[in-house]
Length: 139
Image (cartoon, rainbow, N blue to C red):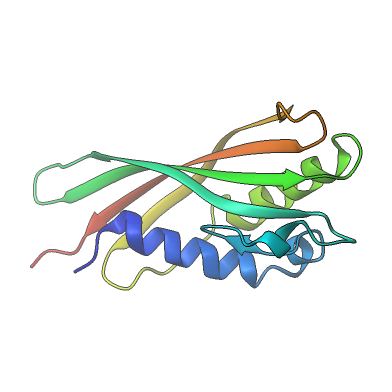
C-alpha cells in the first residue's frame, strides 16, 4: 500500500493534465519542469510542490492530514496570466472527488493563494495551497 501523499500527488497530476481550461493556459504540469516549459505563446507552467503529512488517527481510523503546495509560473507581463492559472488550479481541485488506488480521500480543500514577482524581476509566481484529509482502509 502506497502512502496517501504519493497517491494524492498522482491523482492531482492526472486531474490537472486532463483539465482543458488549465491546459489552455500552460505548457504543462510537472514535478520537475523541462526547459521547454517556458515555450511561447503560453510562457507558463505548473509544478507540483512541497507536501507535509500529519498523522490524524482516531479510534479504528488510520488518517492523515496532508498539506499540498502547487506552483504556477508565468513570464507574461504582469500578474493576470499567473492569476488565471492559479484560479484554474483551484477550480479543478477544490472539493474534487479524487479516487486514490489504496487510500480514501475524505476531502481536498483550497486554503490560500499568494501571487508575487520572483527575484528575477519578470517571472510571476503563484503559490496555491490545499489541505487534504485521507484515511487508510482497515485491514
